[in-house]
Image (cartoon, helix red, strand yellow):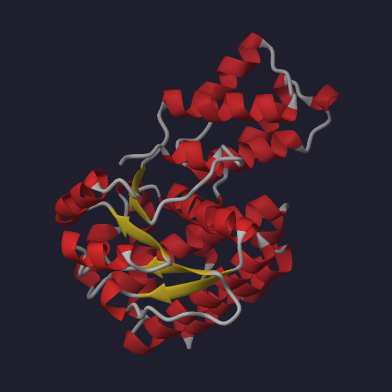
Length: 312
């Protein structure tokens, strides 16, 4: 059955008891937020082990010694069918599939829609209605009050990407109630509009310049997480593209000014470097899950390691 991603990320008391979670869409930050929320939900209620596999053909139904359940994170939709899910239903484990949207997965999504023990969770950029839902939840849970004009101003200015919207709300939450006024809200929105992803475009500069730009734009732990996911997005483009032509086609249109830079970065990569980049992302993900966030120093070290792999 279909399930609204916001019902997962906003409702901390929701009981997630399905066998399968198929998380799809094109909004990377919301996909990652849903995935981590589902995983943390199980970790908070039981002893679980997190297992990463490429496809369900790699799954092994083995009993663990120290955990009551395993969460299987599956990177590829290959091998999914009604028959394969029938077999997985017999196991004690929970399966989370993450797949960006494409025409190839329409039939697979229909399998999960029909399965009563599944959630199909589509993650796309937030529309006005969704932003209202997130903002209202924030105000209800924090007790913050906004005047009507400021409320609708914020709705219009909040970003359509979940992690950017969340970043703004977290910064507002750090203000004292007396400090929540149009002037401070506009300052927060101006800082956010600079875009953490723009730091990635300093990748080939000298370390001294990278550190200066990073310290200028990354001020809180929520900034680090936002920065990490933007870097992860660019890294995944590099890893997944088979050649430069395919890579260029995947670069979002709004980054047309940076296309030459991104192409030059990609030209530095071969299969060996892509594996190194994948290992870096994997180790960082483990730290992110373990610590529920990244420190400012760790975020900078992560970015400098990307540069090291790129120019080596």
